[in-house]
Length: 314
Image (cartoon, rainbow, N blue to C red; front, side, top):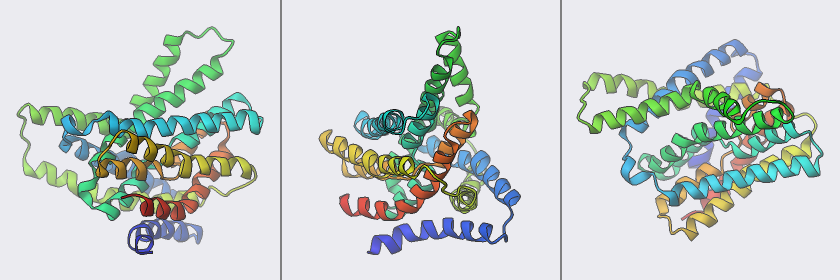
């Protein structure tokens, strides 16, 4: 019970506060958009930049940490795609978007604050490693899968489709923040020294990132009212909240991953679908209602499921 009130509740209170004041009209939709623009395009990339700059790349990028999380995510995608295709008889492009919902957990805006509150800031190294690859890998995967699905029967070459996917990924602010941080990490290791004032400014921005993003996420969720397709939405929530972390836990244990790594892998995997899952569906105009509702319903359900996974973990 302590985990619910001391770890989970503060994070969701910030999110719920953003939801409530936006729902009541005290915080306008344009203000929500402005706040999320600041958080997602500037503050959160700055947080990723700072984290990647200071990460010990030699010891943290371990297959035993990455394979459990990413294997569970890809398995969730395949289950979501198959369920949409064969159980709910959705068109092929809808199946890709629905699979992406099952794949793309909210690793940053929920996973980081939950892990930090549960295990302390020193426990986040594994989270940052997973997050460093999360958006680049999954956006590349999702865009490539969708472009191949759309290109069936056309004359587009594989190279053209892959270039389109890669170009789209490299333009995203989160990926730019990760890549800039990795480049800075290498420069610092090569002997570059920057004044303390630079890092003080970066840290000031990063401290605003997660509270602003959580508050803004609450405001964004007001727009995503669950409407129809409840069986499909429930399938997405089961894949995201239960199947993904269960696979991550099983594989992490089998690989002999240390306790800190298991916590980072499983907690990150146990997060609800992120808003980017809806943005992906919105880009292609496919399964938008399922994606939007899954983000809202999954976030609500995750209050209970995160409590469960924290109780299971060592």
